[in-house]
Length: 124
Figure 1 (cartoon, rainbow, N blue to C red):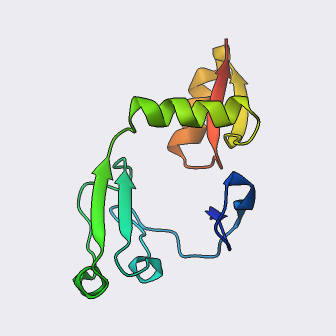
Figure 2 (cartoon, rainbow, N blue to C red):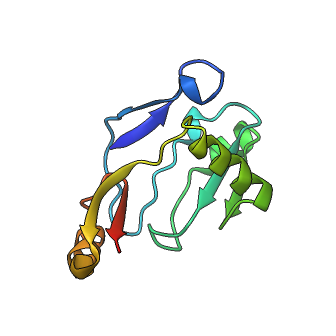
C-alpha cells in the first residue's frame, strides 16, 4: 500500500509518498492505526468505501483520549488553500492513469477492481 509519511514537522515539502507494508483490509474492514495516534490526537474518517460498519479497539480511544471525526468535505477555505498549493506546484495529486473518454467503461472497470494507485482521469 502507498502512504504519505512525514518524519518531521514542516510544510508540504517534508511529506514522502512511499510504499508502506501492511495487510490489506478485507471487504467490510477499515484499517486505522489507533496506536499510531498521539495522546489527545484526532482520527478523521472520510468516505465510506470499506463499508458502514467496522470494529475498533476502544481501549486506545479512551486510553489515549482520542477524538474520532467524520467528514464528507472540507470547508470552502480548505478548498481554496489546497487549490492554491496545487497551482503553486507545491502539492500534486497522485494520478494513476488517463483514459480517452470513449474508454470510460474500461476506466470504471479498473476503478471497481481496485487496481489504481491514485486518481483515474478521462480525457474529453
